[in-house]
Length: 526
Image (tube, rainbow, N blue to C red; front, side):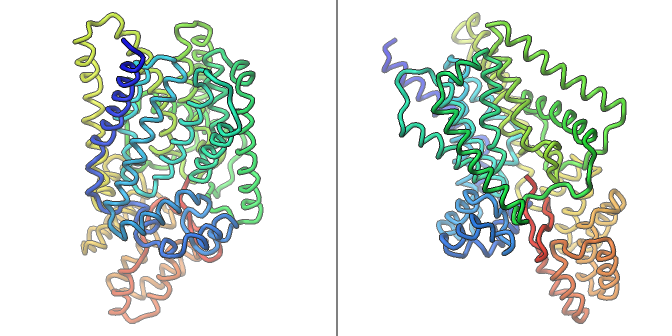
């Protein structure tokens, strides 16, 4: 086969994988805004401002104080600003942008897998595996989580660049391009900080650590320098109280944090390698018991030992690299850094590249002993269950009402899921159903202040201003005076019963947001 024909075949394969990703999640194009989209996209007044002043506020740290959602993620905000100019408030245009990013991420995963395995067949099959992962439904269907697509695109591109077979000397343009790509990812979402740790982990799995550094001084230097510069900017924002990424407010000891991290990494690695399970929401994790702490710690050590053992055998080095990716990628969102949410499907998005590497590697080995005609059929049979589950997963994001109903079914002990359901039912006029849902949410977690704020709005919707005022006093006593929605609730509760019902209809959405500034602004959990 000629080189030109081979190149055309590879290009067609990459386009086919990207098309598979697009077709699978295409139903999202018809979906309404849901979850955090309601206030970060649909009802976000910051997107109506000029781009220059908006980015100026974000880069200087003034964005959080002015209530701009995702104030430390300017690339994400800029992409939403562009969509607002192109599509207005039409959700289909925003979803189209996210779907295009997912197709780009899928194509980038193919290049990254090839750079790591040096096998195009492994790369294409791995890319198909990545494309159909059900756990990806959240980042594709929720416009607000486009930031994970943007950061992953940078991470995959950087890995492909660092491990690509060397054919020519690198120059200043290539170095600048890699630095710009990494900066793009970091300014989209902070989990792109795992680029360099991932590169080192992959190199260790391939037993090429010295090669990575020795033949990539330009690349390693570009990634490191860019990451340090970005880190200095975020450190200044954090030190001055202008970083809007919410962290766990309840202090945890070092031992508990480490054990929680072990549990998180084991689960995240599994979900990255077998990205089958999905859910729009998860209940908060309890502190591990002593027996659980030992079990999770042993499991984590076992995974590391297996990866090292595989790295010592040439034919399994790519598998070791895949395990390393699935294990290291979630570090940026682990309890080690105390994010407000401990579990979310989007947290394993980058880590699923590890599962794609492993799947592609094994598929490449198996394909060598299968007849040509059988290979396509075998691949379809393997991918079909993922495709079926992925279509079911993305359908949950059809609209806010569907989302919260599914969330309570898949996370029946989540107070936040029932809080979201309550608000959705109230906004659709089912006040009795809303009351039952919020009562159950408070029963599940009496300390979840967002549930109490939502119950407060339920009282306002009924014109029960006396009950609403009592709730306001109770929430303030519990330290929730700056919760999202409280300022409006206080205003509504001061009105007549009839006017309070009309006022309550303007409450902002619920979701995984917490206030950070005195003005009551909030930001999405990382």
